Length: 217
Image: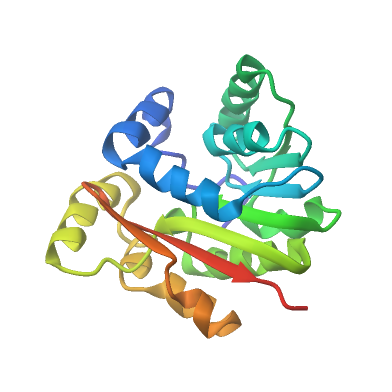
């Protein structure tokens, strides 16, 4: 994937409505709340939000741990501008960096935690692998990688809803591997236990799964 080739959130023409769409269609307060509790940001930690988009969760991280160093990483310069404005309105300081998930390890020093939400389903398979590997490389030994995304869609209803919403907007080529369970396969290559979701939130756009990977060394 070239530096210019990435799938923008909901398609670039709808970017201004992205936050509203996520809030209405994905049960955002449920899965983001669960993700924030799972990450459990603490003062003094360094935290990287990969594919931070418009910064909603990045700001939540900083608000939950004001003394943490929080970095938001995204390839889209336009959404980073929106994210910076959102942080300013919330009165928090976040470091915003432009780059892909595969660049995560180059934005150190080593992080205590790296997070990604609703990003990997939009990536080509090679980039999914590179991105997860880079997130693991970005955290120190004992650190954590947290992912919330559309993963395996279990059952006809979730697969149908995913096809009618997410795949209609983001296409089939990159999203279908997620629906078929490729995230679980990639995570299992690191740690079999990491392939088991910590929580699955069913939405009208399909099921969003939360994962936790601990870097042992």
